[in-house]
Length: 324
Image (cartoon, rainbow, N blue to C red; front, top):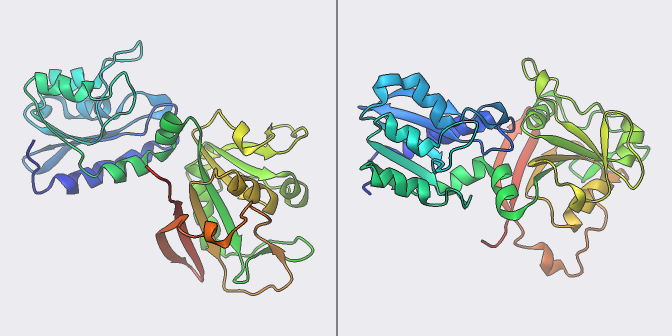
């Protein structure tokens, strides 16, 4: 198992490819595959909508006979179980004559978990694994969280003024952030299966919650309403953060009650904090009580993952720090 000098670089490209399949690949993982021969990319693939074809199948079909003797970079261990929808990817790589397979993360699915790697090695293929595993898991975080923890991966979006308000005292909030920040928010919508707001936001803002970016209009997520009552047509009512069990990725977009409920339940994995360079004073706060009883409990929960300017607004992305 000898890593080459460019293995991490090629794997980073495969990981970037894997994000193209999110969230459409659900319920399957969004995997990326790159086939490289003599330092040149000859084919690439990512898991398609509905989970098929797999990334490896897409890349092998594009490579054809050129795959023989090449290296395949795969962000998740090639599957070892065949199904009615297609053969096992480990068998397909063997049949194509791939000489070397570089794997980012081992598949936690017990049907594959180590078996795909072992099958490749038994066929005489050199296998290198654990190349950028954390980055690969982060790229497929919705599937990984669902598969290992049995719940959706949750992103909470907060758009606030510098003094932490999400609206004026009368509830008006259009618009706190500028056009670039709002466009980024629509891109986030397109990468999630479902989007949720609370009853107060629905009644006050009547949000459409669709994706309004050219070319991505068809990627609008399923609309969920956090409520103990009923939901209007086109919406699904959910009674609590713990009650959401039919999606892999969820974007919580408003308002104070919904955001606080998910934080209190410790169901937020990723926080998008958009801050506009404005002061409101006396506005509606972003959060209510989230269950903290000691200030010490608030520390060491969040890790800054990204920070950037979007026009005049700042976006900070935080990840929940969890053991393991």
